[in-house]
Image 1 (tube, chains in turn brown, orange):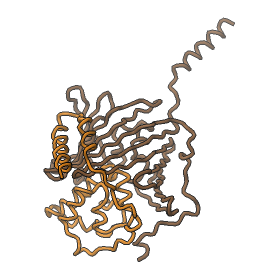
Image 2 (cartoon, chains in turn red, purple):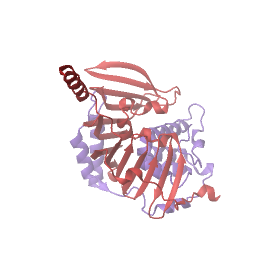
Image 3 (spheres, helix red, strand yellow):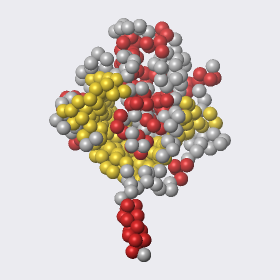
Image 4 (cartoon, chains in turn green, purple):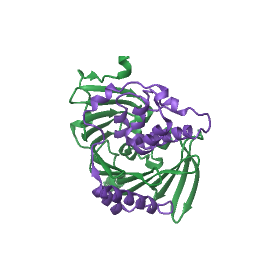
Length: 234
Length: 137
C-alpha cells in the first residue's frame, strides 16, 4: 500500500510540472493610429485567432468590415452593410502573417519572414542583444535586421539593397498570456522624404484566451453577394 | 498650419532619435505626436465609389507621381489605385498595414528603381491595371 501511495504522489507531482496546453483561441482588441504629414488616421479592430490558423477580424472604425483568413491564404472580406463579400487567395493574406497568430504558434522568432522566403544570413551580439540578419534569394528584396532581448524580438529594420533604411519597427510591452508572449505595443516608422516620415502605432488590449466568443466561428452569410469588381464587368 | 509644422518637427525628431544604435523608441514622444495630429478619415466613407475607378492607360501613369504616392501613402494602397487595380485594394493595404509593411516597401522600391532607370526598368508596368495583391511575384 505504501508503494502505491508513493507512485500516486510521484505521478501527481510530475503532472503538476507538466506544461499547460497551448491556447486554442486568442482574441484581442487592436488600435492602429497612423500619422503622416500632421494627419492622423485611426483603425480599430478585434481579432479572433484559433490554433488551426483561422483568423477572424472585425474592423470597427472607420468602417465596419469582417475579414476571414486561414493559413493557406484564403481570404474573405465581408461588408455587413451591403451583404457583399470579396474572396481572394493570396499568400500575403495568410493568417500566419498576423502577429497574434505568430505569437500563438510560438513562431514570433522571425516575425513571419520565413513565410515570405527570408532566411537568416548572419547572427551577432551587441551589448547583450542578439542580432539576426535576414536575406532573400532575390537580391531586389530588402535586407531585414531583427534584434532580440531575452529571446524576444524588440526591433526590426528594413534596409533597401542600396543600403538605405526604409523602415523600423519597435516591439515592446511583452506580456505573457498562457504560453504565449505578445508585444502589446508596436511602433513602425517608415522613412519617406528627408522632411517627413510616417509613424504607425499599434496597441493590443483586452487579450483573452480560450473564451467562447461566437466571433471565433464567424462565417460569411450564405446569401452574401460578390463585391462588384470593375475588372469583371469589363 | 501650426499643428502641421509641429507634427512634422516631432516626426523628424522621433525618426532621428530612434536611430540604429538604440533599439527602443520614445513612446511618450510617439503618443504626443498622435495627440497633436489632426484626425481624418483614411478614405472617403463612401467606399463603393472606388468601384467606379476606370482602368488607366500606360501613358497616363507618371512614374514620379506613382513613386511619391507609394512613398507617402503606400500604406493605404493609394499608389495601386493610381496605377489601376481592383476596387478593394485600398482595404487590403489599409487593413493589413501595407501588407505588414513588406508589400508597401517592395512596391516603393520597384517604382523607385524605375524612376532612376536601374536594372531592367519598367517595373512600373507590373502595377498598371494589376488586380493582384502582390504584383512583383
